[in-house]
Structure formats: structure tokens, C-alpha cells
Length: 227
Image (cartoon, rainbow, N blue to C red; front, top):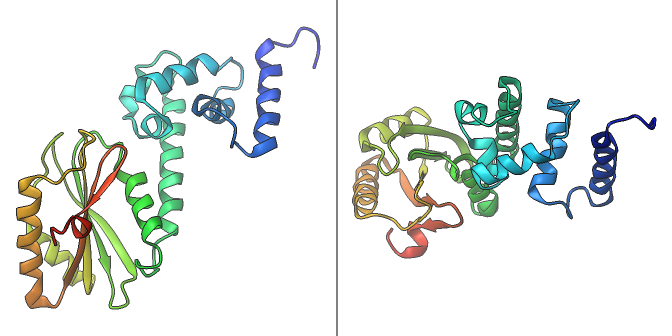
């Protein structure tokens, strides 16, 4: 590197070496984000931008999950950079899904919860997702059946059962998120879940659990004794 090379180029090499030593184990969130931004923004010091993004959206997951228009409001984030960050979210979600699809949920429960959290914990509005299982409790499909507001999403048991029959599913796991961050089930959540469990019985479809995804933790209806 010549004497006139910009300072940030030397910083980039040092950060890459630091990453290579522990494959990211010793790096801060903003440093990992810096590394990701190196390719998207090759000729600028991106450390300040990485710190700004973390401050604006909370953590790496929050940055990747942020809407494109909100990302573009940050000075230094172009359309290309915003879409690169969305690509990061898509890749992480796909990798998490690969860890559970086609596998029995009993033996891959932690991976399944991780997948749900990756997909939903940073959503700005409520989403209602259904995981469809076969007779061996293997995940055969998952679908977001509805999206709502910051504190409500409409759920219709008949639509859930319609999709379950289309997939020839033998069991279901319901999942939805609470954008407020608190995963405590609401009274409406409990009522809807019990109604769906009863509606599924004539079709020999079992409702295994209903997970509520919060910002830091996840609540399980089964664990809470609500199913």
C-alpha cells in the first residue's frame, strides 16, 4: 500500500485480519456490518455509517430488517446499499429455514425457533405464520397467512384449515410476532388459538403449539399451559 493510500484502506485490511483470527467472534456488531459494507461501498470509510445504522435500528438484525425507504433515509445509504442489506436478511432467513425444513420438529426445535425469530423478530407490524407438519412431524411448508398493524393481525381459522388441507398437513404450529417486544400472549391470542385447535379436530389435525415472537424472547402456549 502506497504512502498516499487513504487511511480507511489500511483500516479495512486490519479489520479483515481481525475477522480472520476468530471468524468474527471478537468483533462488535458495527464491525461486522463494516465488513459487509466494504463490498457495497468500496471507496469510503464506512465505520461511521455502520455505527449510525446500528444506532438507528438497534442491532444487525434490525438493520437488515429495516424497510428500504427507511434505510435510504440514512445519509450514505444508496438504493444499492439498502438492497444489499435486504439480501443479507434474505440469506440469513434462507439458511435458518434450511436447518428445519423436512426435519422432525422434536429434534430440531431450537433450530425451528431460531428460524421463526430470524424471520419475524424485527418485523414492524404483526405477522401470522403457520408451520405445516406431516405425520412424522416434519416441517413440509410454512406460510405467512396475514399481516396487520403494530398490535393486531386478523386470523381466520377457516383460512388456516384450508391451507392445512391443501398441504395435507397432520399438525400445525402457529407463530406470530409482537412488535412491542413483549411476547406475552393477549386474551385475543388465547381465544383464537383455542378456537383453531377445536376447529382442526374433526380433520384429525393437531395444533402442537403457538409461538409468540418478542424482541428478546419467545413465548410458547404449550409451555405456558395454554394448549
